[in-house]
Image (tube, rainbow, N blue to C red; front, side, top):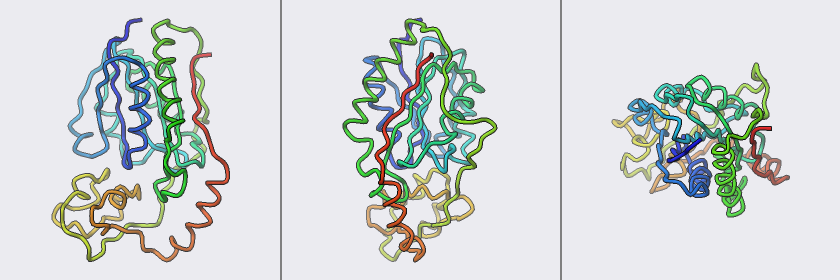
Length: 261
């Protein structure tokens, strides 16, 4: 099988999934195209057909052991034609549960032929102190090496069945954290939060208000606000966070790689 191009497709609110996929793409030594589907505008405007000479690498973060909720449009604009694909999920050093299997099945439904899969660890969305700095240099080196390995496996048409971890029907239910960002008086009304919110939860007419029904607490607005106006000030969050950080940092989890067996 000939592969002449790699297309990295990702939903990456805080950038960790994008980093892992970028390293994977570099490791393939093939031309790379990036398709960022993090915002609703990007997802709603995507209508892309892929061919068997392309390798699609799809990456999303894990929330409570599942893929993010309410982003069916990530998949609806992607049309495979037996196109080889790699499924990648990133998670904040807790566990990825059923998310990788869920992504594989969603890609199968879109007409892709998932030939490899991987999990990587990234800074947790709720705290920069959990898995701080990850994916780190070692993670990225593994991603790049796996990019080379996966392409070789696909080109050589390695036989066997791809088996990834997870259970179906899904045991993990995903999560919708109760902690919500708020906006302080430091807001300079630059509009970046509304423009880049993955769920369109911030109105372009009122940057200070976050629609709690749409917000999924990815904290992209908190991480990226240039004036530090987006914060999580809930007293319950402040009291709960140290124990959560200690629990999740107790063990360093490592990337997991899957090829046909």
